Amino acid sequence: MSIGAAPSGPITEFGTVEGVGMGRVTHEPGGGPPRSRLARLWPWSIVLLGSLYFLMPLIGTVRMSLRHNQGASAAWRLILANEDLWPAFRESMVNGLATIVVSLLVIVPTAYWVTLKLPKLRPIIEFITLLPFVIPGVVLVLALIRLYSAPPLLLTRTYGSTRLVMICAYAALSFPYMYRAVDNGLRAIDVRALTEAAQSLGAGWPTILAKVIFPNLKVALISGALLTFAIVMGELTIALYMAQRTLAPFMADIVRNKPFEAAALTLIMFAVTWVALGMISFVTNRAGKRR
Amino acid sequence: MGGAGRPPFRLSWNWVGIVPFLVFAGTFLVLPTIVLGLRALEAPDGATTLENFRNLTTPVVVDSFRLSVKISLLTAIAGGVFGFLLAWSVLLGGLPKPVRSLLTTFSGVASNFAGVPLASAFINTAGRIGLITVLLKAAGFDIYKAGFDLYSFIGISVVYLYFQFPLMVLVITPSIEGLRTEWREASENLGASAYQYWRYVGLPVLMPSILGAMILLFGNSFGAHATAFALTGGNLRLATILIGQQISGDVLQDPGLGYAVAMGMVGVMAVSIGVYSLLQRRSERWLA
Image (tube, rainbow over the protein chains, first blue to last red):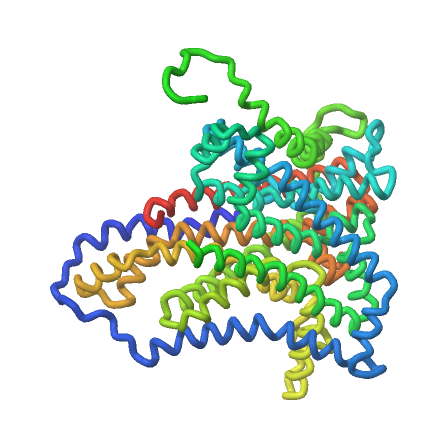
């Protein structure tokens, strides 16, 4: 009910507006809207407000990480010395890298093939890659467990096989970002000409993909990969219900029991996200300048 | 290959190239969801029934969906309005260029900064011994006595806004950039004030994008689970939290109803994403 109610007002407004503009002709040439000092104050105060809201939780977390009762650096020392942290960190890293590999192996050849041979199917493929937006993580993990844990499949019988299912689910969750990045990259180059040129020089499909298409998509692939990595490093829901010992469930536990160490760990995680996603804009900006 | 002289009919094997993708997406996205949907239509004895969907009116389920809708509506509208204002300020408010690229980068990070770290950051800020709580208390204002609670509806909403309005900034920026200077110049030449330009030109052109983005925000919040779980450990029963509890312990004591709740969730998400893309297409008429 509430979803339907929201658009109705403004859309009618849109309808009336097209008519209104036509009748009003006032003859006052030139003279743009006055940009007074007061008018300039607005943008600045909004940005200031936004920055405060952005920064407050970080400042609060820095403060909390320094307030352990055994001294200012105690929370940091204790969390870095926690013997469960590094295995969890390593496991999340490996999951992240594996997810990237799986996602690239599925998406790049598909997007390339669709652009080259099946352009009419593009909307369908795009639709499928967007499904993770429709199926929330918690629903997906329920569905995966109910389907694959039950006989006769029992894919989640061991820790390792469950982990494999989870990595594949992560790869599926990365499809919206990965497909969009790769598709944008492919549209920026002339896939057909490049392919035909490579073929006329005697290259086969694996060579074309590895030596012609991949290098041309480098920026798109790096962006998609870094975003995927950031998502996997922080993913809680699926790992939690699949009982995986990754970073987010470990961290959720720390948050519940050790607030000061949790603050230190939060800052570390924020740095990881920041580096991964900051690198995206670095890579894209550099590519933009070279063109 | 290809080129001129295409035969009138040929059996193309091109589709084989997308089979790996279809199999993968089928195995890990589509099939599990379809099976879940079929289970939702199953009575305990295996017969086909709509009973589970009828049972969605159970108070526990209704309450969880109502809470999810409330939080999602609030954060979609507040995040949408503030995100738009922020994007507008930075893009058209005459701010220096570096502020702009800083905002884009920061929005990219913050819109992905959900889950456990976000919950922790807000516990440190607005929790009972958090920075703001302590500062305001020192100034003589106890926010917890005034009715604020981080682990409640209003608290979760404040937390969700942290990823909601950066997402709005990211989604709406291309649309604001799509406003042509000619339109502004034309309306200025016709004597329109800044207010009139926005009232009759700018906002109407942007409105489908703004609404679409807000609906995207709604879905973004509706499907969120990790942040709320990390913050409340499941005490605040959103629809996603209820589904999670159903995985670990069948709290509804009715697996079929659990599947129906999950499918209801998928339904809400599908509608919001669908409306979003419809509005997106509509806005492309002007802003493409």
